[in-house]
Length: 173
Image 1: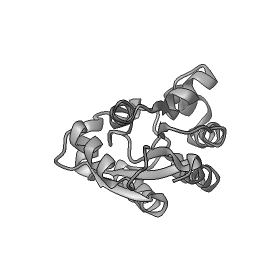
Image 2: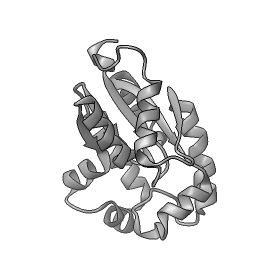
Image 3: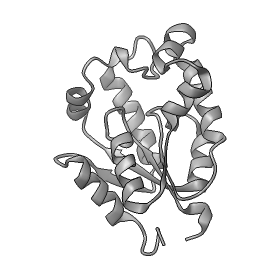
Image 4: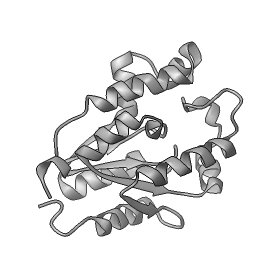
């Protein structure tokens, strides 16, 4: 595996565990950790929800694409926002940087973990239901993933181990 592909990129629905599992992976592999939602907020000086409220969900997606396309380096765990998969350009860039891992959970689990998703800065059409968003994104997550790891019935440590178990031999060496 080349240094170019030494990163792990986590994709999945909000509440799938990308940030939490990402930190655990970073600790296990002695990698850096990047949460792209936090990068966006730092870059913009406001929360994701403020961006959505003031400029709309398409503005958030445009900003997210710009932030994702600036990423570089190696030996990083990159936790993306749930809407990263809407940008073909950003996903092509992320695939060049590393292995894309889809943390897959069911809609029921999303609902259980997410609670009131109106407060989360989720990039969706104003009239779009969580069910519709889940179906739309699920197809995209499958399209871009190199690896799928199910989070169903697993705690965060177990999901972390499942990700580690899917990596090619010698990946982190």
